[in-house]
Amino acid sequence: MAMTRQFDEDAVLERVLEIFWIKGWKATSMADLAEAANVQRGSLYHAYGGKEQLFQLAFDRYATRVLEETRAALNAPSAHTALQQFFESSIASMTAHVPPRGCLTTRSAIEADASADNIQDSVRGLLKNLENAIVEALSRDEIRASLAQSPEATAKMIITFTRGLAVMERINHDPEQLREMCDHLVNLLYSDNSQALAAVNP
Image (cartoon, rainbow, N blue to C red; front, side, top):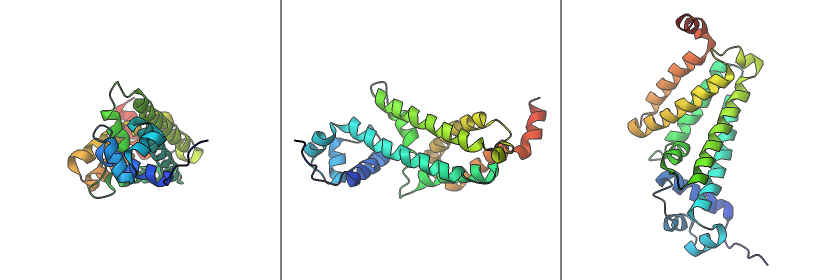
């Protein structure tokens, strides 16, 4: 008969996610996770198998949350508002808490080496799902008509840009600078600039 876990699994995984987000995949140890979750290390091994398995479960929670927040931010009546809300949501996530935690997706992508194939797959999967969510939101008729590029091209640009944005946050720790950079990109992606872009790229 399966043993009943003597802890609140939801609370444990939330604390595990927090410690991975703060310290990163490589720097986090099972001792760190056990201390943060207030659970014996042996109980964590018995319940989940190890650090990588715990990371996968925590990252799945994070990915679900990111996708929900992305879809909510992009649910707007215009392309300009949708893009502004998306970037504001991204910046808020990166700069939340003291000190700011940055972007778990980008940090994990950088830290996961060839020995961590499952982690790389999880990061790739989230980025692809994010891209698909952006394409879906920007493909609505009232939104698509206001874009300087196709929803597919716009989504790829946004995904690439936000990875660089996460790096700049780690370097400068300046949310206002991040917002300024995002405003520049929104102005380029919005159709008010489409004729100017066409003149530059006939």
